Image (cartoon, rainbow, N blue to C red; front, top):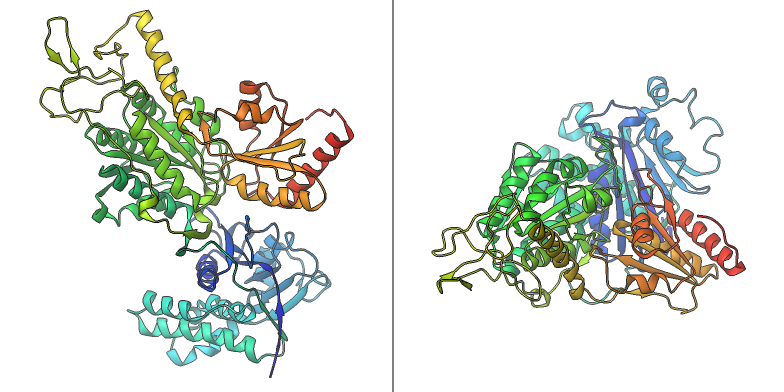
Length: 628
């Protein structure tokens, strides 16, 4: 039977099921197939915080969304074009996001009276008009899976677990995905248990064959590879890119990397990944708590390593005293905060970017710390490497603000040529640097380098470089304990000036203003880059002139930011918080910044943001002066 193949330029697919149905694995495998095919892509895993949420309930629903296209894309998509729902709860939890006319593939096996009740359905939505607006394919995926793998002698429960592979095979046929990568993966993953391996491979191939032979699907779809700059690409998540960036920071500086960390969602994958790379001189220490983690990392920096600690918002609060200590003793330290919904325990598996003000001001006293925020999963590599450069060059702790969306989401990443990476010079102290009043050669631990204001980094045990460190205020130059008011004022201002001088090394802020006639500027930071970029494209397509700028360095801010902000009549600042960057911009530059805020635990939706941008552009065009 010959079936029609329809060309599409982009598709958004969401796999949804119980948290034990393997939806994250299914989505990941579809993503890897798509990356191998050459599409541009962006993903959004979404899962409960509980290890095993109540089966068949709305809180227990796990989903994985992948957006792939034949052109450059920036987000995982506002809404799915295709929803695969493995039970009633998955259908109910995700149906509200589905646009009219979308394809809905439902596994009917679990649509029992009991499971419908768990999901809050009084009657079966497959049997009334609830789903009339969608292209519904009601299939017994579980039953077909059990039948397909019966030759392997599995119990019905174990056989049913392969239903996610059946669904993956069906979707792979529908969208022309290469299948061999998944077959190879299953052979590797279950190679030690042949009957499980063979059952999963058979279920996967059976799903593909079902799509090929059934009359239920008369059309398959093709999304051609995207045109990308030449190079070698791999699919990468933000946490993996951060780990690779830290390794690169160690290699480029010649420093062994030490990670002292306490496991916390969604940052733990960085610890897991770095623990695999002892060959690059990486040492990992799983500490008993957050304070021990950062304390060990700072101790490693004192000993001449690149000290790193990873955490999320609650852990950053616990680490604040030791970050202040690192500011006082002026040693390199990279602190990675993978932000999540808060406050307190909050939403451990949901994304947010509400730690900006904590990163800037969440310590006692005047304790300035450089802050960097990556904009995409792949950009996490560059952000980690940049953090290492600043920490080592300026002898300071640096905070990297990633978030849960970047951490778990993925995109194609061009692997950089090692020769393109910057060299980082630790410049350890090797001998005395001062002549005292008696004419003797001595070592002053707070005698600063003129350009960066960085103090010398002396490895303990180096003859002649003995010195004291600690949290008490230091005298300028000799580093002795000092309670002198004038010295304290000088040291506070010097530590601030050192951080301010980092801005001298930053490139000019890029402003995307193709028309050069825009009166509205959209400014963002961190993971809002994708939604803002997609929203700006939509607004421009609607006829509005809109400019966009995105900040990677949040402290210090770029030198030219103030001039750029005042170049435009209106400034819109979209954030996944209640307006923290907008507050900083208003205070620093006296600009009437308008906040666009969402704290849903999900990335911003480009369509909704585009509407807000268009409305602001229309108001500005009409000369209206409205309050934000």
